[in-house]
Length: 144
Figure (cartoon, rainbow, N blue to C red):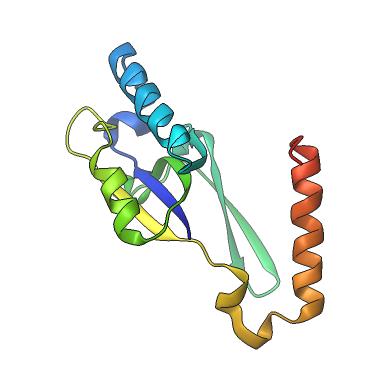
């Protein structure tokens, strides 16, 4: 199972406060554990929402909303993509994570949909297209 693990933003991350050298070192060790265990597929920090935008869809219309965005607690400051056997395993890994923020923080874990989750709506033609796109992405990333 794949999981997206979302590090929630706080007022410091939204203000552009960079992590300390100690936190970077602690996170580096933690990420190394995740990689050695075969759990981590990807992970990145995100710039504050003041450097981002949202696109709101309303029928055929598109409206661009420039950041910053009001509800800090609803924003994401970083993420990991993990491969775990279960939600319980992912929770176990999150519990070992250094606190990513200066004060209280929250990390959300969400399972990523897989092809079989879509049932019959994911036709053989759509599956073939998905496999072709994944292979193309892997080639661009230099993976076998």
